[in-house]
Amino acid sequence: MEVRRELSWPAPAKLNLFLHITGRRADGYHLLQTVFQLLDAGDELRFRVTDDGVISRAYDLPGVSEEADLVLRAARALQAHSHTRLGAAIHLSKRLPQGGGLGGGSSDAATTLVALNHLWQCGLSPAALAELGVRLGADIPVFVHGHSAWAEGVGEVLAPVELPGRWFVVLAPQVNVSTPKVFSDPQLIRDCPPITIRDFLAGRGQNVCEPVVRTRYPEVAAALEALSRFRPARLTGTGACVFAAFATEQDARSAWAELAGQWQGFVAKGVNTSPLLTTLQQAMTC
Image 1: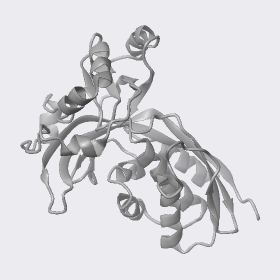
Image 2: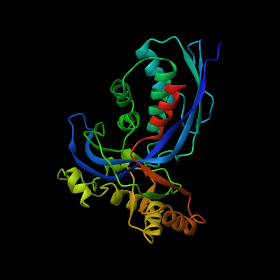
Image 3: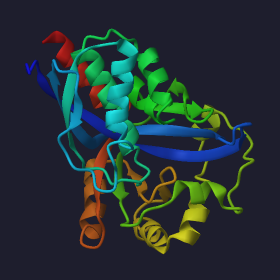
């Protein structure tokens, strides 16, 4: 087995700065409006490209079988689509909480598609990679394209946005929020009037899943209350994590210093361009 190359690739987290449900498709999927804010923190993957065609994982992901692992599913989808005879041994350094609403699994899958497209020399465009990715998860395209974005549809209709460079404190309550239960809750608002990007920038928008999650998961309600002592706090996506925005790194780290003794979480900077694209550019010049 010949080893070709090994690189390190970031898989950044995201926040949903708001989340509205505007309706449902005939197939039952909810139609959304949201803004994806990318962060400069997340997971990290390494790929050892091989000649034997085998795709394997050199990491343990508790509770996630190989059949359900989005990283392996993304790699195998790209391998089948491109007809490459190459394989890869994949290592994942998992830093983002599973089910936290930070897009960790989707970001890992997107990084796998982007990195192996380069390492295997498949030659697929970002649009083609995003099309492969959306079959695995609606959030994957935003990570493939690598830019903070306004999103509609089921989250796959994207328009890049330039967001202010803020810092975020993210708290991660140790509870597993069930997305299917949230979306099936009779109290969930599913008929939000559509808004525009201008409306959002003017301050409109909420996470309609937050009241449901607050009621079902007291740990999340407590995290929201704790973080709201510093800045208005909000749930991200349909996960357990909550966040608040700060104008400066110093303000964010000051708040985190008071919360760190009781809560798990982190401080991160909001970015418009994904660190994954920076790594790709560097790899292409090597």
